[in-house]
Length: 124
Image (cartoon, rainbow, N blue to C red; front, top):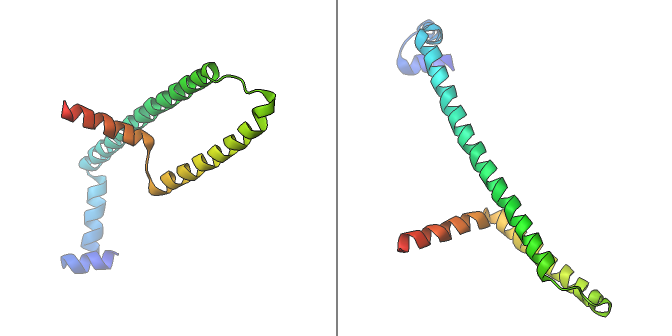
């Protein structure tokens, strides 16, 4: 690689090596590394904050769904349980199929919710 750089810059390989060592040992190098690390840490901090927010939303959504489902779904009489279980399996298979397609396409319901919300905010 050093040969290609030297050839492209029309300098000797030793001049390329000297420039690299000077750059590495210069005080600016440490500042540049620190700035790069700071930017990366800032980006990671923002990503973690978004993940935490998304996790809280997901947990709250699941908890509310379970609460509403448990309080709003009447018990099934024993004679209807077999057909209800069959319908449940059928619906679950449909759910898995839809989920698989969305994951393959990279679609996210959360992103759609944000898009819908943004659409409402821009229309008002």
